[in-house]
Image (cartoon, rainbow, N blue to C red; front, side, top):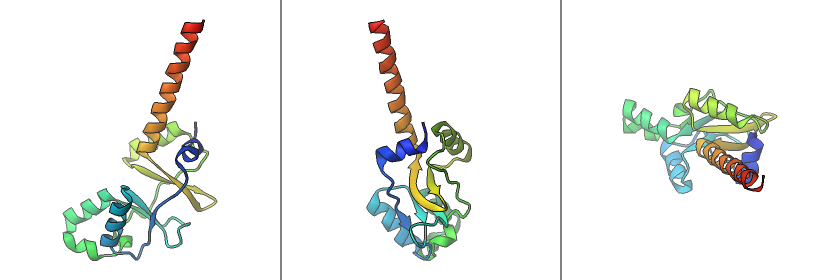
Length: 143
């Protein structure tokens, strides 16, 4: 199974934040959407960073509330780990675990085509396990 399988099920819409937004604007957008991270992009197609709730909390803890008035570009992760539609889900799980990240933008030909969260990966893995268990039960009962 690969990333494309997840995107076909969940869709490929990606919410973004502009690098020149204030951190408070970005937080409001996170809250409105009910998501934990936003890809940072000036044009909605090219990834320049990623920012999550965790990034905001870390900066507030270290620098105080004044960080909320700074631009998103000041707190975003610049070296974004991405994946492609063809990437294997097991590889994604390994990458997310090793790097302690919860969101991976999906990029093809330098363009943003989706995003995969750890929740998407877990949901897919559970569905896959349930399907395998059902197939085994049917095999055992029908011979």
